[in-house]
Length: 465
Image 1 (cartoon, one colour):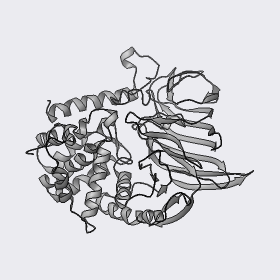
Image 2 (cartoon, helix red, strand yellow):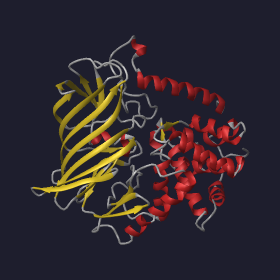
Image 3 (tube, helix red, strand yellow):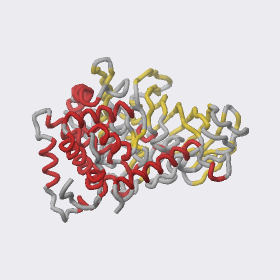
Image 4 (spheres, one colour):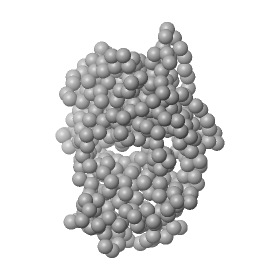
């Protein structure tokens, strides 16, 4: 099996090629002006598109749960990273009534989830342009390779909208790759009595003709899969941690009592991790507790962690930790999902350690007690085996074990400085495992190839490291 050093060199080469593909995906084709239909992620090759960088999404959505009907307009502001005579967006289903680029009607075709757009005039590299898509139909629930549901998952009174890793094109046209972050405005119109919750701050709400329009704004860059417009019957409460507003929404009919108490802990958790990792990344926060048994999991949607039922205390800690690691510091390729989940799982361990529970080392020891024959050891976190198992326990627990073992190896002073630097250097950006290895070696003042090879890549229980 290749060493970490070889993997790192290969990863560096891949990262360089990937960056080139985002900026100029068709150079290898002799200077073609066609944006690529995907960004080549090994888990989701057609996720995202080449030739442009989205700067902002403005989504105007009118949804009625009766008939599951969505009438919508998306205005996308982007910058061309190459000359473009054609480019793609990701969108599943819907009828498109109008599509314009810079105000001019553009030709378009559909090819699976690819919305293939030919503007009236070529878009020059470096130019900012807008795409307006008017569309309508039933938003799509997406079934992932592991069998889980995501996208627009209907509930009894609305929809639980969660997108990791590929659900966003089920309800809006997007450059659906975590590398292409953008800011967002949401205008969500629903029947009066229904609450619609988007990312970021609530900037407006008004009633008209039996409907209510909720307007939300996320002013920090956000990966497409972290967007949400969950809607239904909710009780919405607003509080603050410092100057940051926290929006807490709970289904008052279907969710047992105690959910608001769970969400109230967010303020202390944010304060705690702000001291450990650095200031909270965003200008708002909050959580949503819905009754969505078909989903069966929680998700760290940016600034609005979402829970399909009343969460356990550890789950709330986990999702808040993701606001730093996963949301602000985001993976570049899905194979590196341990950079999200391992960090959030270790954060749970450390939170417990500092709040009278087991130490992180005791949590490590409990996981390490699994016998060598356990399947837990055969799927190393940085090479877990594909999208069908990308959310399996080694990504979380062995990812967390990697961090705890690193903490012991380089010492607390270097380890916590590493975590703070990892966040500070990469805030609002994208990272790879190779990036983390390099920074760990720099802060730990030692060569760590064998260590990371053992913990992240070997399909066996570590014996020495």
